Picture 1: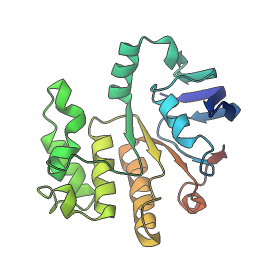
Picture 2: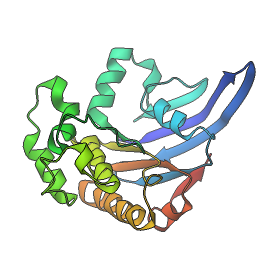
Picture 3: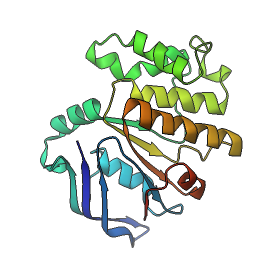
Length: 212
């Protein structure tokens, strides 16, 4: 499956001021590829990901998966599509504090009645957290929380992984470690990665990029 974004436009209004985030924005991502979208704070990076995930409509342009326009689907069809094909992780690694790492990873599968405990354990082990499965979020470091969030985004085996500033909350060493892990995910799982970030260090790991 490929993703094609053509002539995308988005504006919003704040305090009676109309602000244009972007206009005529294009990108293309094939199955199994990786692409970084670079832009400063306020350039619309998070909004772009929300549109590609089908959570927010563009003002103009198209978001196509294998030629099918995401916003020609019904809301129910978009939700089903997102659950099946798209994984998402943001910079805050939000967790339910009363659940263990293993339980947090399995949250996306909760509504579908799927038992993903074996896959969840395997992902946590792959990401170096095999001894942290029963730990609660308060017992994990920032880097560990990011890896739990990544495992959660991958639990349903999505074809596309959308990442919102995955290194912004990490120091330089942990940032590089996360980027190496994402390279591993892209290569070994074959998951297409679309990452939005202001961190140009990303280009040392994922050289293909576009700018907002």
